[in-house]
Image 1 (cartoon, helix red, strand yellow):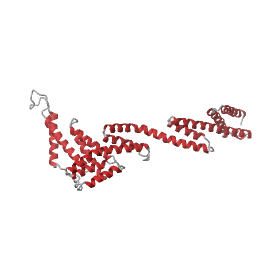
Image 2 (tube, helix red, strand yellow):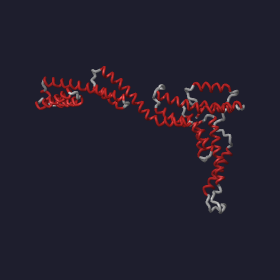
Image 3 (cartoon, one colour):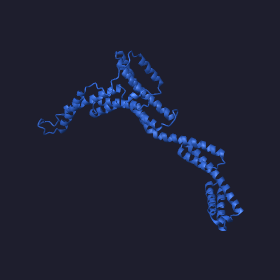
Image 4 (tube, helix red, strand yellow):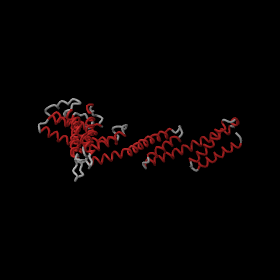
Length: 364
């Protein structure tokens, strides 16, 4: 090693020693690393053969000083990480603890174990915080719907939130909150069925009571043992078994009824769409489409057929088919029609049931 290189390395060491004495761990570490970089640079050069015992001793001193500065800096990052934890800045806490681990030497086992535990804690907190930010829109909408009594809509929001935390254990507070909220919403949807079941039994309509009970059972939360036992008692109290299910594809309305309804609607739509004020059948004193009543009547008739089909599939627990039929009915009903809103509510309930993982295979 020539004198110039030796002096440069010595100057870096002196600079590092000054920073180390002043407890400036970062600048000290930088200075020592520069000195070691000079040693590394000459390793591949012929001059390396001229490194003396004093030079090797100098390198050892620099490496020891670098280790001391690094450990002190690691302790500082640990303190910064603890401060970040207290201020709930979990992402920064993770970064600080990771930096502390990188800086600490492998020989500092007690320190490494302590910081690794802190890092695990910070990562869990940071994960929960990120999940909280992701879940909040769904949960807030679900809570708003629940307070407003729109339980089917609330269920859909809570289920979306659950999808985002599918990997969390069942005991996690986020999972517990959502499960409890879903259970409450499902119970609220079941309560009207209980009233209708009671009326059907006392009206001597056990078959209808069984159909209502099956629909109520679909809404049950899979972990709601209380309501499940209650509905089971009701089922056992109904005097007759449920009626045989209609075969798939069987229509109560005849094919001729469907064909006529579709034909009437298409003809009325064609007349309604092609009407102009110059129509020779139109009275000169009015601008009203003379085919409007015919069109509205044909459209409503076809919508009623789709709704009836949807109701039938719903009672047979064929939820996907019921939803498809309801969608067709909604395309035909005017938004101002009472049946539009009734159909829409039924479809929302079925969507909530369909998204429940414990549904039987017959639901599709």
